[in-house]
Image: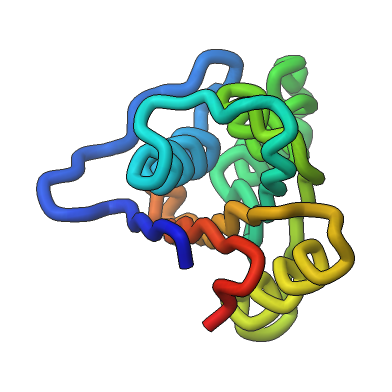
Length: 163
């Protein structure tokens, strides 16, 4: 493991909003924990070109708050705002992190049916073993059922670092 971060850690309030993402704490939580993890390894970034760092986002429930909002809006006959179509795909926030940090490896999202850590670590192993990536930023996130941001963990794994 090259770096590790959690959200929240001591003294954390809600994560900062992320431009282009609305209504939900899902994207801000992903960005906050990914930034914290990458800063612990690389400072302020971005990483140099050719870093082959993948982003692997793992969440069983995805963005609950946005899904609930869209469901309620449609059920009421309302019109769903265009940003919800963009942010309803978890790859959008994973891509945001990749662009922000200059990560030029694959972007992968998983919805595990079992243990998120084990399934995410197995996918990270595949990305590293197959040579698709030299490093993998693995982000595990679950929002709380009430739509509050919840918790997230990010780990940066490199070739030969699997625990």
